[in-house]
Length: 508
Ligand SMILES: [Zn+2]
Image 1: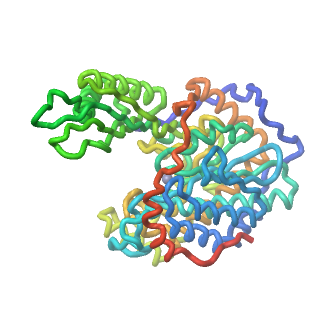
Image 2 (image 1 turned 90 degrees about the vertical axis):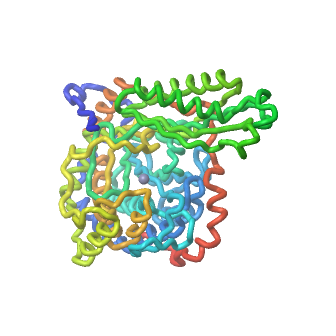
Image 3 (image 1 turned 45 degrees about the vertical axis):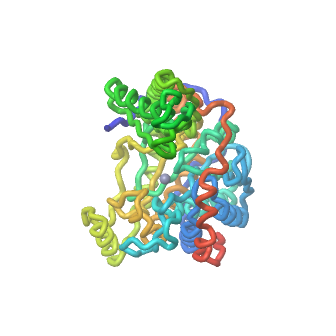
């Protein structure tokens, strides 16, 4: 699927921009200002790497990022930011702020790990640090250090040159389960933000625009029946598992009538206890995705009707809870072009022979093509829409967004798989973070000092969201699932704690 939305930019500049109040005196970020910001990034290469490494060993799952956000709070407060933990009702939601008024530019990311991802760094064979424990097999650990160092470099440059505005860092919990951003948006945190840049680890230095990935709705369906002996009096039963299976059959027939872009997958989370006890409770967890949210919601509504039908057929009752819902990420071309110009300026890291050799060994051991590390930046427009989802989507439909990746992953190594947990503390990851922090700090400075850039991005955003207006999929009474992943972290944390790094890094 190659669905990149190209936007017509004609006549966009005539639209008004009520939210912005950028002083006319501020000037575009000069080369010298960017060089200054980059010198701060370079000076902080070691602390930035250590922040990333510390988060790697915390390896906390979504909603349980307590050690990770505690460290990030320390780092950011030490760097002069005001830090709020617990916004929008989530204790591990971090919102950091420096400066005042507009332009208000936010750096958005996440720092959660994945279940069963524990792995010894740089070991090419499967060797968990703590067997069964969570681990960073996507590299979200690198997000925190990069975001903090880039924001600090921007802040120092703004202070030196009296550049007006606010720098914000938003680290939302539980990205891996697509949970937190709809709540942060609902709580109004992005209302006074003029633009965001969302950063994510990747195998390339790249940006893009249009729809970057998929819309997703996830929900738990429960069927309630009546138990009976499977042989003695089955006619007295109302079989809840039958309802789950009939829902499956109905969904299988629905597939023929869906847009070719759809995705639909499920697990049965409760199928009863033993065959001679007809289950009075059975549950399935469904995910519905599509290239845009209106189509995903339409399919989800059909799935609800199928569940109602399954309940009717079996004489059971049905209820469902939406677990998570995320819009596809929408990137603004205007901001992508600004990011790309900085990607081109910064270039790629200079990989050593050892790093290239290790990358090829890793690729070989994972059964991938031995192509080594990328040495050229990716041109604009080279990224297709991904089938994955990210709850930052809801932020990107609320405020003009730029999307960027930085080259800290070995190409070909699939994320959410243990091989991807081998390198997030390597010099490959660290060098990619420096590259990413330079691109990010320069792009934020561009947004901070070029009012015409923000105006153009806002006009583009208004046109795009008029064509497909944002609606919240999360029910209005939904509360964030704060116990998410708690049992898993409680089980492994004591063993994992032995690997925590003792040093508390600081930016300077
Ligand atoms: Zn991710």
